[in-house]
Image (cartoon, rainbow, N blue to C red; front, side, top):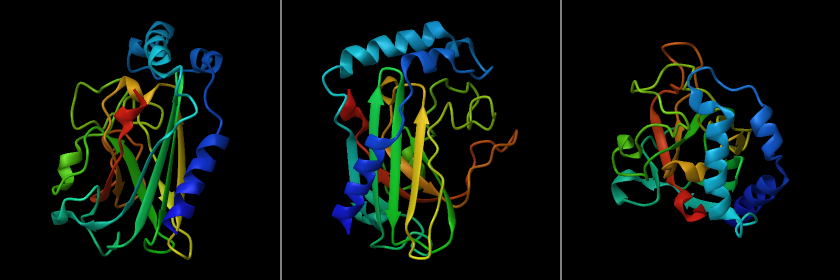
Length: 219
């Protein structure tokens, strides 16, 4: 099952549309900061292009079978009732000078349930808080970030999903900035779908599980 999960993630990532340079520069951007200007996008793209020109076809892939958090593995569950020990997850991330496509697939979770999920800045640890905050391209000066100008699926990588009758779920995110421009270390699965309203934006309840993802290998 794990090999099939990895294959599904890799195929999904390669067949998902990735932002082009023209699209990235022409897309309407958040009003939060001038950092979303064409100049900032171009600067990030230039750095990413130099780093990735030879590696565009290689995704970063992480797979894991969830174990109790106190065992210290790369895939930890903090709530075995909602993310059971033995459930599995896989993440594939493709990055281009003008964008990143990230795919999450899970199996063995609670059937017919909605979960939130996001890319976080640190790798997983025994404490759910060890993964740190969400990765943001334009960082909110106020933390924790609940301002929808910053906490949104364009400025962060959101991977909310709903499981089917077999406990299998799947999500894809495409953003107009390279993940290599930021520190990123994990995908955290949360209690419920991510909120979007002011004062609650980016919130998705308790951290249920975490999968360490070597996003830095894309550099």
